[in-house]
Image (cartoon, rainbow, N blue to C red):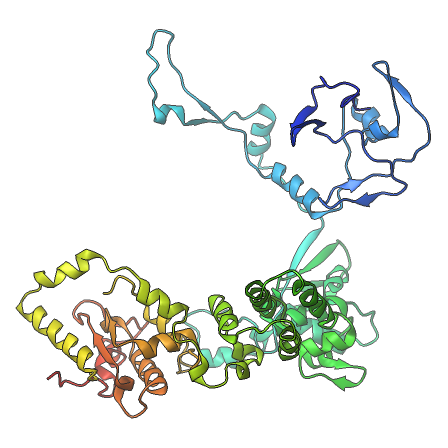
Length: 529
C-alpha cells in the first residue's frame, strides 16, 4: 500500500509542489476504474474496482486506490520490494532500454590534502572514475555475452520495382554485374518468387513470412523454418516518399503476393499506382479526414497558418487529389499561390510536383522577390570585402574593372561572402548517366534568382568536370537567352589547373584533362574588350 499522503498526511516524503499546490509525485490516490485503459501519457490506468474493502495503514483506512501494482509470486520468490508495471507501449520499452544501455555509473572526483589550499582546477575536477565489481569483471574476463536479443529480429527491405541496391567491388566488370540475375535478388523479390513457386503453402504478409521461413544469404533464397523463432521488421519509410510508402503498407497487410504487379491488382482490376491499390483495398482511408482537418482549421486559423498547414499536408501526407483540396479551401479564404509556393520552396518542393502549377498561371504572376532572391539581396557585405579593392595588384585591378564593366553594360562573357556550391545553387546532376539537365524549375525561386543575377563567379572552376559547365550553360540558355552562351549572363571562372583538376577515378592524366573545363566546346569567349 502507498501512503497515506496528500490531505491525509501533507508531510509525507512523496509530496511535492506542482502548480503551487502540494501533490503526490506518484499521483496517489489513483482513480477507480472498472477496466484497464491507457492514459494520454502512455501509462496504463489499472482496473481498480470499488469493492468497499479497506485496510488500516498508520491509523488511516485505505481502499483500492492506494494499492501499488505488485506480483505476489515475485514478492515471495525474491523476498524484496518489487514494483510491477505493464509493458505495452513504446514509452515503456524506451524506458527499459534507457537503463540497460545508459552505460556505467561515473563520478567526478578530486584528491587533495586538508592543508592544501582549495584552488579550482577544471582538469582535476573532471577526472572520470569507474568501479568494476568482481562479478562484472569475471563476466568480462570469460567473454560472456552482456546482452541478448530474443527472438531475433530480421530487417526487411522495401524497394520499388528495379530500385533495389546492388553491391559490387570496384574491380568487377559492370557489364557482368548487370547481367548477373542473382545479384539483383533481394529478400523482397525472393519473397514474391517463393509465393509463386509454392502456391499450395499457407500465405502470409511479408513481416509474418519471417516467422515461418528462413533467409539464406549465400544462396539468396527462402526455406521453410524448422527450428527457432524470428520476427520481421519492415524498413521505415516516410509518407513523403510516395509510392514506396504505399508499397510498404501493402506489404504489411496483404498476404501471398507473387510479384509487384500482384500488389497492384485488386479484385481483378489493375491499379496504376500503389497509392490507388491501398485505397481500393481499404488499407488507407481516402482524403476525407484531411478535408475534415481543413474544415476545422478554417474556423480558427488565419490565412497565413492555413497556407502553411496546406503545404505541410502536401509534403508529408501525399493527398490523392491536391487540386480538389485547394478548391475546397479557397471557398473560405482567398489564398495567394505565391505564399503557398514559398512554403513549399522552404521544404524543397514546388506546386508542379502536386499538379497545382495552374494556380500560378503565367510566369509574370509569380513574385520575383522569392526567398532565394531576398536572402541574396539582403545578405550583408563585410567591410573587408569592400576594402579589398584597394589592395589589388595591377593585373587583378585590370580583371576587376573588366568584369564590372561587363556587368554594368550587361555584356555577356564567358568569392563572394554569400557563395554556395555549384551543385547546391544550380542543382547540378550528380549522375550524368541518368540526366544532363539541372533540377531547376522555370517557376522556382532558384530560377527567379538566376534571372535577377548579373554576375556569376565560379571559384575553383578548374576542379569542376566538363559536364558541370555544360549543364550550367543549358540551364542559363533555358531560363534567359537561348541563342547566347550562358544565356547572356556574365560568368567568371577562376582556378589554377596546376593545383587540382577534376577527380576522375582510374583515368590517365590526358583523360582527366579531357574531363576538365578546357574541353567545354568553346563556351568561354576570349573577347573581354
